[in-house]
Image (cartoon, rainbow, N blue to C red; front, side, top):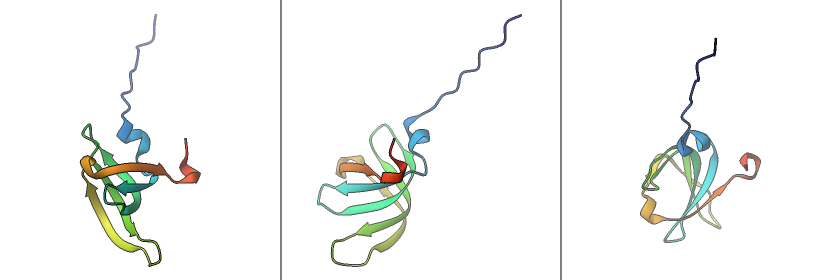
Length: 82
């Protein structure tokens, strides 16, 4: 008797959920936060987000949705690196 095959469907969004990232925008602003959700158009929702500006204190933003068309790059926090 063979055991049933169980398939798990994992998505990129699941893989990166709760990972701390730095998102650089096309205008060079940087937003740091935990990935809550991604979609296939590169839009990302960050929780516990802060806008980071050199020379000033981080500005707390809470939850933010960053449209993919404005994302220049994404960096994963070093302790969460894959």
